[in-house]
Image (cartoon, rainbow, N blue to C red; front, side, top):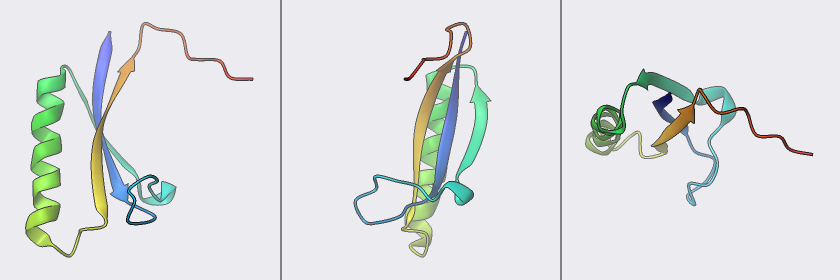
Length: 73
């Protein structure tokens, strides 16, 4: 079963490639993408409105709990 999470935190630079790990928050899980997207939009919109939080970025992560974890060597 897939779960969706909204993940966000302060970013390390203006290129938005990496979040500061100690600041990253996982919000959820959400049962479907649309629910996660609504929460993402709410949180992302709040950072724009506050303008002081311009270094915070949110994304949606999909985690499939039925699939085995990926192996890396």
